[in-house]
Length: 229
Ligand SMILES: *Cc1c(COP(=O)(O)O)cnc(C)c1O
Image (cartoon, rainbow, N blue to C red; front, side, top):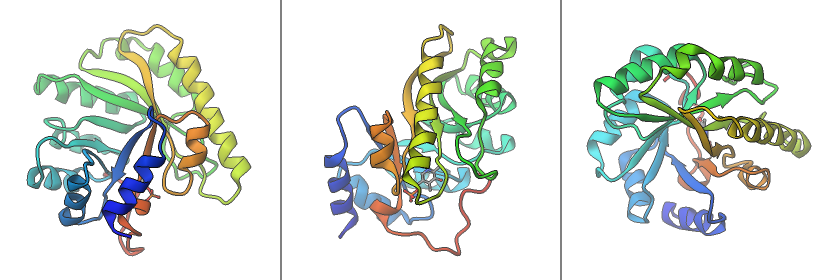
């Protein structure tokens, strides 16, 4: 099937309240344009430099979302245009995003990444670190960022029960934090679910799925991914 067919099929299967992020990392602009021409306007990338190159080349009505792990010193390259940053997992990073957002006269939407998987390698905050971050004075004074949701990745496993438990755990943290009243933290987005697990994620309350290979085809195993952005 073509990229367009994949995209339209997935889109038609999603409930109305679930947003599709087309994860286009490692794929050439021509592939992204095929999705664009089929109506897709939200793209997710995991490397800041690659995302910036694509932003420069592509139509300006695209929303670019950073889904990868972020190095503080590269934040400045995306702050002029990024529409949502998924993988925020420290106060230090938030302070840098806030600083760069201020320079660009913007308020940048962010998701906090929560560690729900068993693997050590997946980034993110645990529940206690999340609560500490939100309760800190430093956080309350960040006026140029807004936390609008949470993001998480389940363990890479065939065990559906385990994946479901991890998604349910994230949903329960989401519900807890959503009920708090914090000026710059008002949750509406729960970003969970990828090609292999998005139907389950949606059953568990996801409102945003990040889908790559099911739209664009597999990525070369030789291409590094999931590393630092
Ligand atoms: C690559 C990636 C995805 C998409 O993965 P697929 O399995 O290709 O759908 C989703 N989220 C993050 C954080 C990723 O790095």
